[in-house]
Image (cartoon, rainbow, N blue to C red; front, side, top):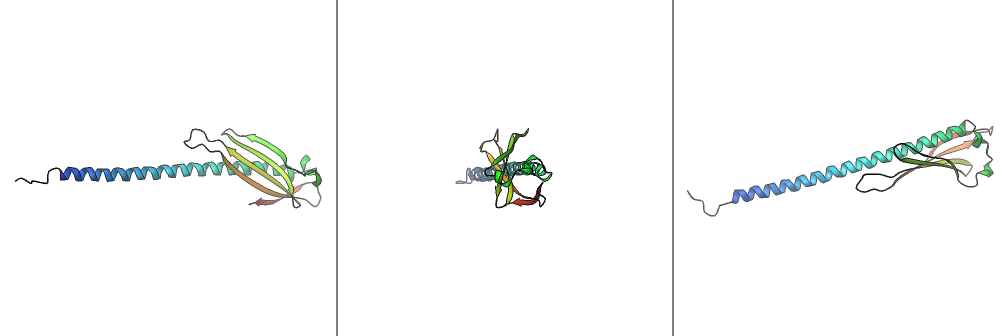
Length: 148
């Protein structure tokens, strides 16, 4: 039996189905790639925040223990004082500053990282701040907590 007019319909249907599957797989690939980029960005953000918090806590310990900076008079904190600048092995640079604000000593750290080998290389920043207050004895500082 001859089926005139139906020649190649099944091939055409197969090609259309293959095209739909290719579009679906391209969309899935795009979604997976976006998720991987978001995960990498989140990991970088967490590493920067932890590096900044660690740097602030190290400097705060010197104030709590009554180091030489702990004996500075409140009037000497008229401007931002750079406490430390460091770069870790994984290219995270961190700068810690301190300044006097409303009767409290604010220790602030900014961590930054220059991403390398990525499609979109943007510099990432993360900043944290902690509050310290001079003790009643005046020989050291007391940790009050993090500020938003």
